[in-house]
Image (tube, rainbow, N blue to C red; front, side, top):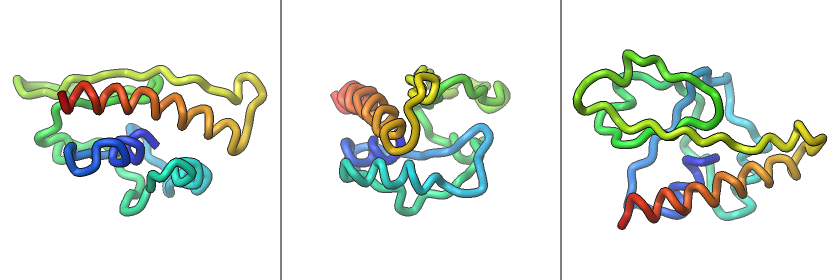
Length: 121
């Protein structure tokens, strides 16, 4: 969701890559529908792991939640900055489905807008 929202707000001003520490077999259709409601898209995306090749030339990594990145991938003088976003989990309050995803999406959207502004200034 964060990558799709970043592409929406940054356009072609930033190169955005998306990967996971434990990628699933497919993207969430529900999450895709949620970002589409605000004009973003998962088009062209697929589940993939964080690899050394994927990180080539990356300046910033945003980790959502508690996921851990292999420290070996972050070695070296040109290692990217890692930023961790602790997001709200509405299901802990009994909120499910599209309402849950909209809350998560909107939280990420606020953070993404601030990050895009920071990176493009």
